[in-house]
Image 1: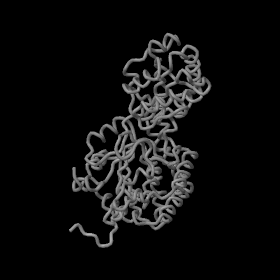
Image 2: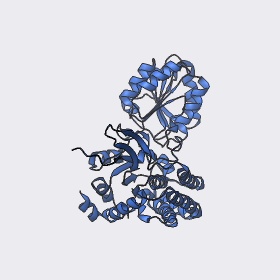
Image 3: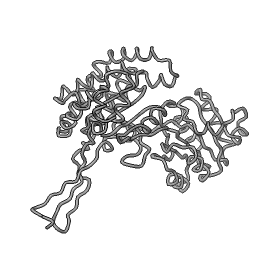
Image 4: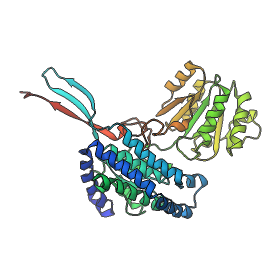
Length: 419
């Protein structure tokens, strides 16, 4: 499907205004974009009751799992977090216009590489309505127009949040077409966005494995994505036991349904007999279930057996796979076999072991003595994130303002010709 076909689907009614809005945003002042974000934050607070009422409709209609419903549910604290997120983005440095590199050629030409917006972003996401606010804020600040297609399960919430974003854009004198949402829950809009070559510059999917796999399979527009968040925490032989217990409890159980949650515990055989029972006890008390390999089962009798499929599963729930490994090399081999190149962590007091682990993983984010749930744009100081990327081109890890820019070359001369 090309641009003409996209127009017939209903998405084309959005792409033309989005392109015009993107041009307006690209030439707008930092102050005006910040004003839009601050006004949108104020609107989120002022319209909180409307947002929560809309969200109640979405949650009431959902028949999904508890973890999915948690991602879908809004409350006053989460609405306030959306508002603060927009304010934090407003407070970040403007990513546009930065001279990324500069040099002068022997002929006197001054060469500059300058940060500019990508253009029109297509954001396809599921369940979490706050993703729409984060995406809108990051795109406004980085000078990109965005077309949002949220999941059908969050449509009422998305519309209520969109109203607040439009309030902010109007207050700042910017086109409301800077941020648009698909007109309804028709699944055809996804296909139209994926093939809208020339109308949409970049697709960012954020949702379950099946959604992302579809996007990667069908897209003719460039994609920035990750398919799974199959994250590992490796407790090394030189780990501080108390730190390991604290870090793992957070990495697994703080929020089980996010892509940065640890799904597999790897524990060194040297400390597993003494520490693994405590780790299982800690997480059991929080409602976690387990599967373990034969070595883990020998240490903690009663653990259900883990299959190879279990180790390849992103649980997104209160369930943890456990494997006992001999050393750092074995941990890295396990991650290479089963991981999704998202986020891996090592807990250890041995700097050499940590360096081996950090340098030996092929994931977008690697951590030492910290919870994998820190893989989040806000925690990276990005204000928010529009998603996580695990590819190796353009951007990796949390995608914030700088990752939503590209560059152009500016060549400045004083009459040079090639002759």
